[in-house]
Length: 246
Image 1 (cartoon, rainbow, N blue to C red):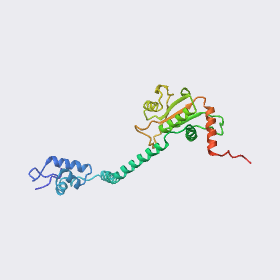
Image 2 (cartoon, rainbow, N blue to C red):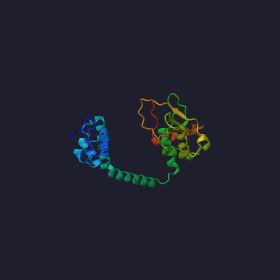
Image 3 (cartoon, rainbow, N blue to C red):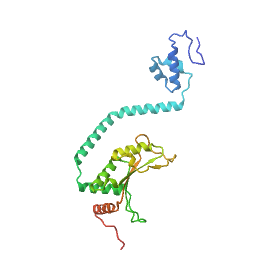
Image 4 (tube, helix red, strand yellow):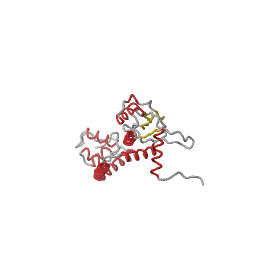
């Protein structure tokens, strides 16, 4: 009794012959499955799986890919309990810290608001020392909302605030505007025209997908005096005067 060289199968008279299992074995082998895995999946012996598929060579790239997937699955299983415990500990720490902060008083809010503006906002430069506009840019909605609370504390009227989204051209700019509008509590129609950033194909960006909403710019109309106040707060907190030439 001979084996068919073309298909690797035995004739129907072969004891235990099951054409549907044989076809599945060949498909699994071509997908990169080893003999042991095929035997387990089909409920046959390893020797049978080997006889059915020995003529089908394994694609080295498929083998490497499956090995990486298997290794990742083992790592995920090994670290899953650790990740659950870590995430629970993080949630507990965040909740405890948030409860500790409770409510900022006005002085604390002014100090913190000035500090985050000095980190993330536009500032005057030596070549344009009198360019004292208030323009805060950030992609983190929590920082944006904290800055808006700061504007409330210094009594900047709502009508003096302007909002603009900056986002890459590959993203959904209209959806981003609606998302930010919901955060800051103003109509999307009141936003200024979106600034579109041209995509550079060679840049390997990580901020992509449904969670990418670009950056929000908050501009205060006529904010020069507020800029001066922020500058003074930062000078006071640093407790230092700028160095002078001797």
